[in-house]
Each structure stands twice: as structure tokens, then as C-alpha cells.
View 1 (spheres, one colour):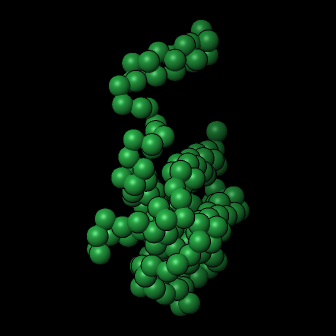
View 2 (tube, helix red, strand yellow):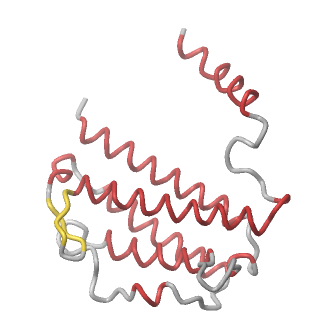
Length: 181
């Protein structure tokens, strides 16, 4: 087994899982919900998606050959709410993830130990990938949290519902029991 190829396979799967979690959360939200904020200091789902889009396009475009903070990116503008429709938000969401996944699919095992730069700071490719995974998972967690706040009791759980841990474990063990024998 080549560990670099296996790592790339796993990290692509992990990014896709994080995206799927965000997809499921955003799909539960209305046009109005995506612009909800707790207070003036909070970001709406629309703003978080706009920020993720800007970050992903900046970081993953020309990933191996140019600084991950592109000159044409206006990070501060990403945090200003605009009256985007849910359709616009979803288009930004999909575009950012598309750039990320296409870049990862084109990486080779030997690329993982190359150096790239983000805001002039040197990172191994492997390190930059992990940095972005943590960043995107953080923001998708915010999207899920906002969704739960906005939807309240109508929120459809995206993981094991409260009080169902034992039942879930039983189903998973039964599902995987055949594989272990």
C-alpha cells in the first residue's frame, strides 16, 4: 500500500463527508433562514458560505504554484451580508467545493511533501490540507448549529438523534457483524 495515495483517498472522502453534512443542513433552511443571525456579531449561513467559497477558490486555485491567499480575494467583503438567494448561496457552496475536490483529485502522492505558501507562510501540502480540513469542518459545524437554532424542534438530526445511541450502535454492529466473521 502506498500511504500517500491512501491518505489522498481518505482526505477526499472526509472533505466529501463534511460537504454532505453542510448540504443536509442547508437543505433544511429556507430563504429567510440562511440570513438569520443571533446578533450583530454573528454570521449568517449565507455569510459563512460566501466566506468558504472565497477561501476555497483562493486556497485551491493554482494550489501548487501560487500563494493560497490570492490578490483578487477580498476576505473582509466575504463577511458582509448581502441579499443572496438560497440558489445563489448554493451555487457559491458548490463552486467552492468543486475547486477543492478537483484539486485534491489531481494531486499525486509525491505532492504531499512539497511546499506551498498561504499568506507568505510556508506549509507542506499535507499540512495545508489538514489546515483547510479543520477550517471547513469548523464552519460547517457553525452552519449545523445555526440550523438547529433556527429550526428548533423541526430540525431533522444529521447524526445519531438524542436518546438513540444504543439503538444506533446495535444497528451498526449488526450491519458490520457479517464483515468480521
